[in-house]
Length: 196
Image (tube, rainbow, N blue to C red; front, side, top):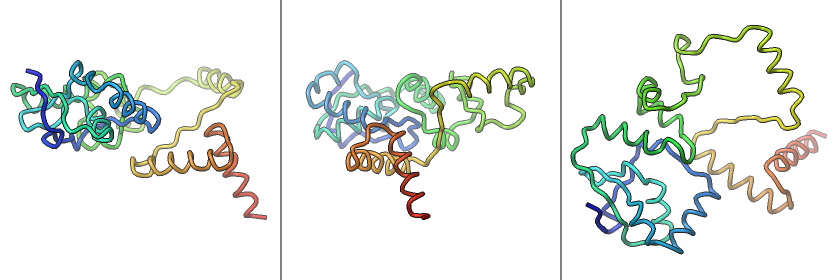
């Protein structure tokens, strides 16, 4: 049964493996402020101890929006294993995975079984897919080199990531830059200037 409760009675899930980027989080907070009734249509799912199984980001956004009450749906019949599976399956298509958190709480086998594509750096050598032959590697490398856009992926702990995003936004604003690429190039130029 869906019920409205004091937001202070709901407990965030400390093992929540999902994060949401700053801009998307701000949009979520804004949408909750503008239309808090939508939370009744998509209540926060909690277990019998009122720990969130589904809706951690909606909960955080509700707190940030200043709500005093939220709608919840309490599930009391799930086993611990079913709760773990629910947390993963409920978050399978939105936001970004916090892989460090996932790797510390769940087994790689369970994550794969529940439908996640686990990055190769988390797999043991025995679990990794077979390597590609030389021709396939050369073909893919050639296609990558000839692309007009390249990608660099950097992995950070959550605390560092949040600080970096805020600093990037500050640098972008203070120097009238338009993108993260511009920020990185600006920082590299500053580094080169200091070396001179």
